[in-house]
Structures are given as structure tokens and as C-alpha cells.
Length: 78
Image (cartoon, rainbow, N blue to C red; front, side):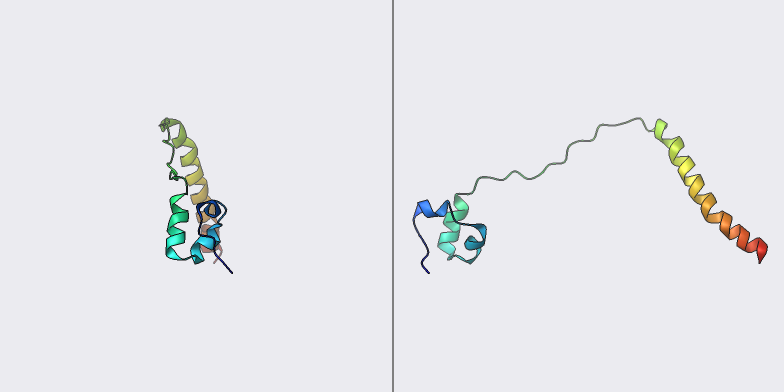
């Protein structure tokens, strides 16, 4: 199996072959890769917190009631 060392063959070199290629050929292939911009999270706009507190409080109260009600029944029956 022969490896092509000319520049034209580097364009068709797969990433798997770059991993097992000789270091000089792999470096040449990596030099032809386009620059990759890393993902940047989008800023989250600030929202009004006061409108979201009541539903959250109702959710917490419901969770607390659903947890404590069966325990209260067990204590009363036992």
C-alpha cells in the first residue's frame, strides 16, 4: 500500500487516514483544514422574575403536599 505524498492527494485524505499516516503527511493534511470557530453560547435576555415566582411557588407547594400527605396518613393510621 502506497501513500500519496503530493498536495493534490491531501485534499481527498480522510480523517481516519490522517490518524494513521506518518507525522509529516498528517501535519501537511492538518495544515489544509479550514479554521474552526468554537461554539459560543448566545446571551440569554433578562426576563421579569416577578411573573415567574407564583407558578414556581404553587409547584413547590404541590410537591410538598404530595410528599407530606401520604406520610401524614401513614402516621395517623399506624
